[in-house]
View: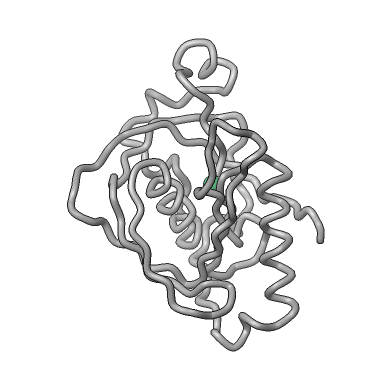
Length: 181
Ligand code: NI
């Protein structure tokens, strides 16, 4: 496996709508290797999610580590792999919370998101998956899905007034570490 280079804000690959993955591509060694490399890259940079456009692949694919206990560094959780995800809000409020992004390093901002969502996608075997997520997990999945449409968390902020460098975030706002996605 390899650690992949992460595109940073300003690279055009982060601003285009990624193409759907052909289900016939999923079992290929190239695709499976990309998935493995994305998981390894996400872990290397201690991210909680990583979308294919962030590693220069314009595909509707992302990985996320939302299953584990985030207070325990040794338990990163099983990474979930979602291909061609479709996300819709479930009933419930929008909530604002802090986000960061591996493609927008060292910045944090308050982003409104649906607190609960329903997701339909394919897994890395090409099997349909349906899941419901809420809270932190729902936030991560919405952030990653946005990457597939060329959207960054900055675009979702109601106001740039909360935009904060990491050092100032820790100093003035941090109640707990915010992970990058
Ligand atoms: Ni991100």
